[in-house]
Amino acid sequence: LSLSYDGSHNGFDASISGRFIEGYQWASGVFSGWIPATQTFNATAGYQFSTRYRLFATGTNVFNQESFQLYGGAVVGRRLIVGVTGAF
Image (tube, rainbow, N blue to C red; front, side):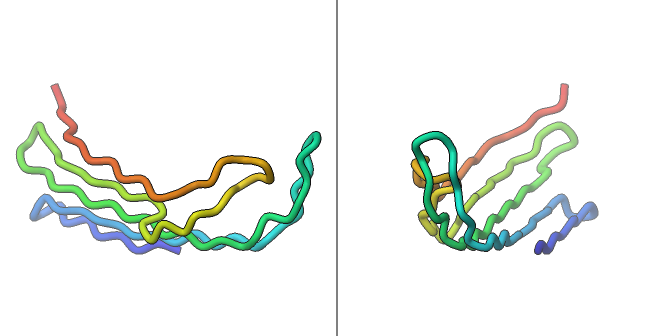
């Protein structure tokens, strides 16, 4: 599920998305168990402030719902990336 805005006329763009996963059984080697259902929400925004440069920010799992995607794996939390891209 996602919603996006592309303001080509004003240089601003943004999107939000949601990912909904049902719980499932995981088994691999010595690791086996139930992976609970998860819901994660991501957001991104950017601004093209010149013909060559764009500022952006991206957040994954913005509500920090700690979960794991495979049994015995690391817990996945919130992540934020901010940057500038340039065209040369």
